[in-house]
Length: 218
Image (cartoon, rainbow, N blue to C red):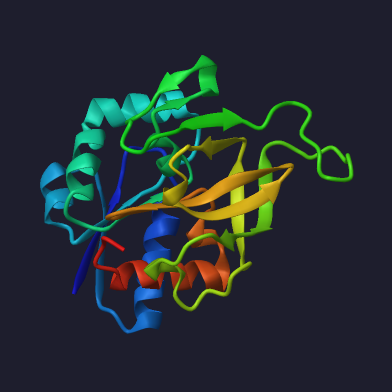
């Protein structure tokens, strides 16, 4: 039995994530108990955590601070697998440009940048911001969560800001959208994705299944 806590701070597709984790467990033949919770005791009792997020980082960080979620995530990363998704990934960083500048949790070195108002592809064609839809992810390092997922698989993205980090050894995947952006990070017990595995069909479900198998510290 894998006990998975999907952290609830009111800023994520929580039920979609929970259902996708349950589905991935069934496909992998793993019995899963998934709870959507902000309760410290329930989070402490879970084998692994999912830290999702959508919306404005200012609102996310306000709720994370109010509920003490940051401390729970920091403690969990020391001993258990944690999967951060979209704004959950961005919240791990040190600072975001969004909303005039917002301090984040500082658990991973780096900044969150805006794509800008004149983002263009290699041919000079203007690109829409937010980046929304399917995009390829190039795997830049081996990791258990990539097992069985072909390099260059397409995942689903929805974001107007992207992560930038000088800690290149932590970058596990990159994608192109006018610039080369970090689409996945990995460090000891945490794996973070800018894309949404729960919306990414077969590759996303495989990643979630790999997360259920993963014991951390890749």
